[in-house]
Length: 190
Ligand SMILES: Cc1cn([C@H]2C[C@H](O)[C@@H](COP(=O)(O)OP(=O)(O)OP(=O)(O)O)O2)c(=O)[nH]c1=O
Image (cartoon, rainbow, N blue to C red):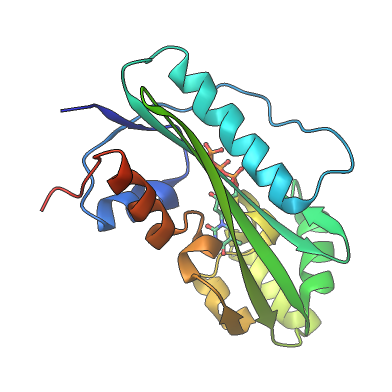
């Protein structure tokens, strides 16, 4: 059986692959996340996912490696993870009462080749009061998440509706990922 490695330190991605009954190991990539200027969000997440997968693949060339990257896009601006409270507040204020897009790119390196894809999910936020934002920042939830929120946690209270795969927002488009893995004979363990 081919060994399957998740090239991600994201606890969400680990939980999602476990939820789908895959057996895998984790090896976090050591790349510094940088991309050139002027790329679309789709290009950014696909490039970063590929960099992460290739980095781990260079040490495990017989294995199947999955890397992923998630960003939030609004007003032609790409939002990664906020570095401090001020940045988290600015992100949440920008997202308040409006619809933004979440992009997750996935790259799968395997002995049979390389597959890269991405999915987009649109998320509409309720209008947020200053108290909503202050309370959410106090929860510390924004800090390790693109756009400064987590739909799967307390951040659920921010979200009015979504269009697209919910799991794209959480960090791994599960339906498409399972379908791609199936093509290279990586199957759930049940
Ligand atoms: C929008 C949103 C993002 N996120 C998370 C998913 C990702 O973990 C994170 C975006 O950061 P990424 O850089 O995509 O991933 P990561 O640094 O957590 O892990 P690695 O690079 O090792 O794979 O934001 C949520 O958990 N919920 C959400 O609702």
